[in-house]
Image 1 (cartoon, one colour):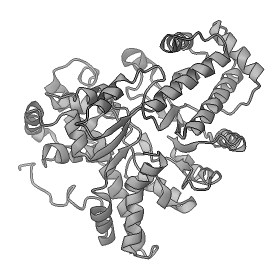
Image 2 (cartoon, helix red, strand yellow; image 1 turned 90 degrees about the horizontal axis):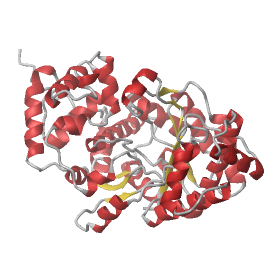
Image 3 (tube, helix red, strand yellow; image 1 turned 90 degrees about the vertical axis):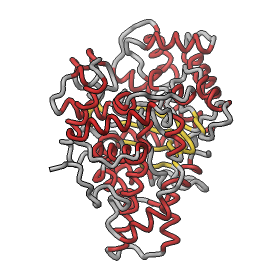
Image 4 (tube, one colour; image 1 turned 60 degrees about the vertical axis):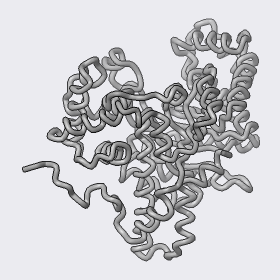
Amino acid sequence: MDKYIKNDNFINDDFLLETEEAKVLFHKYAKDMPIIDYHCHIDPSDIACDRTYDDITDLWLSGDHYKWRLMRQCGIDEDLITGNKPKEERFKAWITALEKSIGNPLYHWSHLELKRYFDCDMPICTSNADAIYKKCNDILKSGKLSARKIIEMSHVEVIGTTDDPTDDLKMHEEILADGTFKTKCIPTFRPDKILLIGGNDFTDYISKLEEVSGKKITDITALKEVLKDRMEYFNNHGARSSDQSLGYFPCTLISDEELEEIFRKALNGESLTDIEVDGYRTMIMMFLAENYSRLGWVMQLHFGVVRNSNRKMFMKVGKDSGFDRIDSGSDIESLGRFLDELDYRDILPKTVLYSLNPIMNRSLSVLSGCFFEKGIAGKVQHGAAWWFNDNKSGICDHLRSISEQGVLGTFIGMLTDSRCFLSYTRHEYFRRILCNFIGNMVANGELYWDEELIGKTVSDICYNNALHFFGL
């Protein structure tokens, strides 16, 4: 039997939309809204040079640890995942993994990517691998699907990249100077490395900050001056937010004298206690948050993750390669104290909280409601379902938590958190689930059907709320 039998129910126009109300909400109020991708890991140099691809393997698999993880779980040889095997072999290995992955969001995302960017309706399976590979590569080799073209096709209005404080942001300058490209590409201040005191690379990073700033960093005052200068530099390049990724969230308040002594010890290569590390991180985070507030930035906080859980593979292929996991602990007490301290001192910036642990959904939604400010809708946000939660059930659980414990209508919506240009279909995936979530509430008699009012709420979540929240 020919496996390519068109199934009209499979990822059709009404994919994931179970009610008439859901269909109306998606097609009229969500589908065509522009995208504000306020957090991603796209390399801005690929946008600056308008990178082209001659093979779907490069576009689909390069740097995508979501896919690498799935392939390993299917027993595929590492040489076909991160190694140097021929591209067609790697592509076909990926197909053999994906066709087994029933219910995984990668299965849906990959089909959406083929449909939206390659006009390909073929189901992804081994028997179609050759045809899909040829069709995609023919389009790529034609030059019709460059990085910028994908962005334009996806109606992306703003891209927030993730950038180290030492970055020169030259690529952002190039993109801005090119008047032919309408999408804003703005940097995001990611100071993770300055928080890793006590690590093997800490003093090397301090040296790098000295080189970039042209200033010696011999004490905590000098460090703060350099960090403040770098934040100003990012702000002048259009930055509207920061992002910190922490395995756990500390809140250990210490004096200025204690902070100075801890920093001195670190510069001298002396060992630090866990309490000293937490104290340093807490006080530097407070200093950063104060400046985010001054600049009108959003503070994004990612936590609840254990990195590099497979030592052998970390040594072989490095970080961000598919070996991170959910932390079983809860940071809610220390996080609550940290936000309270910032609020008490009147230095709490607009904040987005992302935990990789879904057990924290309700707690984060409740905590977010403890802090507010006149004129700012949803000043502290329970951020979008992140990473291992970015799937149908995870998104629904997250939306339910916000709607039951807070105000769904002030939510700032989705982001890709991705390194792949094709990942903008994740916004479509989220929007469909959002509309179905609300549509089912209407169908069940839980929500009065006022199309204009509910439609506006959907459009706000998909676009308008993020636009205003980030001050774009």
